[in-house]
Amino acid sequence: MNLPNKLTVGRIILVPFFVAALLVGFPFHNVAALLIFIIASLTDMFDGKIARKYNLITDFGKFADPLADKILVLAALLCFVQLGLSDCIAVIIVLFREFAVTSIRLIAASSGKVVAANIWGKIKTVTQMIAVIAILAMQSFGDCCGTVFAVSTETIAMLSGVFYIIGEVLIWISTFFALVSGVIYIQQNKHFIADM
Image 1 (cartoon, one colour):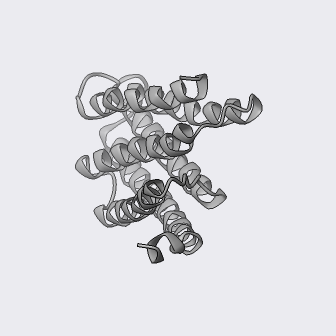
Image 2 (cartoon, rainbow, N blue to C red):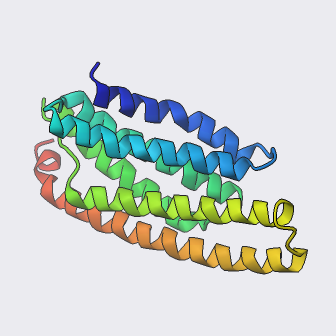
């Protein structure tokens, strides 16, 4: 297994640690979740760059890299719903898009073809990762306000409301790009569905 593929697998392995850090309420757990998510996101950036630079692009990488992104981002979004940090409607839309796109990829794979992610899928992933990182950063700041900076409870409550609104806006922006990229992906690959 080459280095880009190892980074992709590493991203998948980090997901349970990220989920545990986010959902288990230990001190500064949001900070830990943020750091794990950033490390996992960086593996996404580096695996593609290394694969292209050293001509290490493989069929496994074309399939596993977007799948690893989906697993990481969907884990975060589902945790956000459980924690009350995100509206479930946006997450359902993203889930629907991911299942539709993955289904087309599986149909293509059954014909011996690997369909790589397009630029719109990459924009979708970047906006999702920015949204997740921003929400985790705001939650981490909220954690630190109460313990490190000794900010009043009223101020923390006000900040929480503002952070929720900002987080929702970012999630809906990323959901918009998920929809756009999904429609484009289906349009570009509809011949796989027609051939069934």
